[in-house]
Amino acid sequence: MPVLNELEKIKKEGKDKIFIASSLEELESLRVSFLGKKGKITVILKSLGNLSSKEKPVVGKKTNEVRQFIEGELIKRKKKLESKVLERKLEEEVIDITLPGRCFPVGKRHLITQIIDEITDIFIGLGYKVAEGPEVETEYYNFDALNTPADHPARSLMDTLYTQKDGVLLRTHTSPVQVRVMEKTLPPVYIIAPGKAYRRDVPDPSHSPMFHQVEGLAVDKKITFGDLKGTLEVFAKKMFGTDRDVRLRPHFFPFTEPSVEVDVSCMMCGGKGCRVCSGVGWLEILGAGMVDPNVLSEVGYDPEEVSGFAFGMGVERIAMLKYGVNDIRLFYENDLRFLEQF
Ligand code: DAH
Image (tube, rainbow, N blue to C red):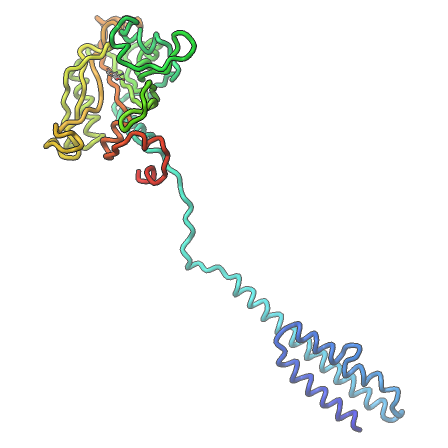
């Protein structure tokens, strides 16, 4: 019977084609071509009616056998192709842990904040406490209580920024915090007061209308000028290096008597003289002195009982000296190329 040969051929063709089918789509079109409505096997099944009653069961049995065989082959191949698809997907999605990670920029503290923290740490180590006061101040705390009455020539030395309210200004220094602390504390007092100060200055490489200071105050029984010198020496060595020398030069501040300006030996040249120290070998780092008895009396302390020293330093100036920064405006421009270096 030729139809049996035909079925045998279909079986072989099906086996071969299914075996090499390389995708699920291809497999589906093979299924249609054998078992679909117009598929080869379906066509034969439909034609069974034309056969004699003797041939029918033989061919029918064979056709079913071939159909089952093809169905079986299709399922086997499908499973194989599906697992291949899965494998490929897993391969594609594998994470390459040998790739270097992406770096996210991490922020850090501004150099001015770092310097303030450094100064604060040094004085905390010496037993000082940190105090704060307002940036919008009164004339009383900024000047009068600091032995600088209205007709005192020192007032005109400071270019003060006044508010529209009478007697209210932006503090020109952190020294008023001394008065505010003493007013509400009994001696002994050992404090530093970091913060912002304001002056009517036009910005240039060494001036800024806003800048930072750290004020210091020690009031106790029998505080001497020697204590001031020793404290500042410890500070300068911790801040700028153990091989630094400190020298005091007579100066004038209304709120201290005697008053000094404090120099540290130049960290660039070690004191020989260079461009940074303009050839003198010394760099001015702060103002200081023994608290004027008038200031102590003003807050109700007895100058016969207690004495004290005070100092005030510019944070930007210290940062500039320590890192060789030559323009104060760099601190406020917030250019990351500058800030990232510290
Ligand atoms: N307040 C001064 C200024 O801004 C700095 C200063 C000098 C503060 C001497 C002090 C001091 O406490 O004793 O220039």
